[in-house]
Amino acid sequence: MEEQAKNEIRRAVGKQIQDLTQGLSEFEERAQTVNLYQPIGRLSRIDSLTNQGILLSGISKSKARLTALQRTLQDIDDPEFGHCLECGQDINPKRLIALPESRLCISCAQ
Image (cartoon, rainbow, N blue to C red; front, side, top):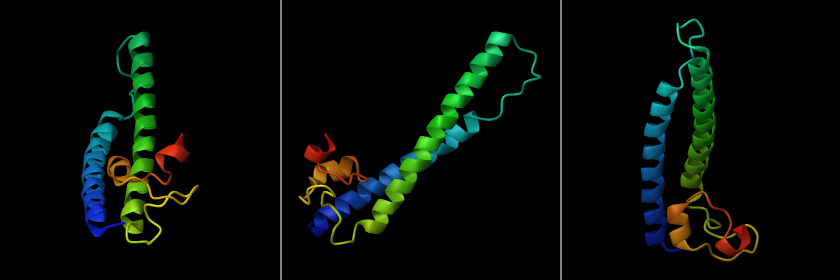
């Protein structure tokens, strides 16, 4: 893979990490523990608990993606980076810019 493409991917990964970190902070702030003794109705409490569960799930997925993006930054200088793990062909750099953690080409991912 050309150095120019790697630099574009590095920039894309950095931007995605920055956005994800900011989003995680907001999710974690909004996913505070629901106070069960707050004087609200039963349905409002259930709604709050449901929303908290959804936010916690989103936090978990975001943390997993953040880890994958950080691993991508570490792997980008590896000679095997950008090669499909299944067929060995080059992964399109546009795909790697959009989804830097991709390890499969479009054909193999389908």
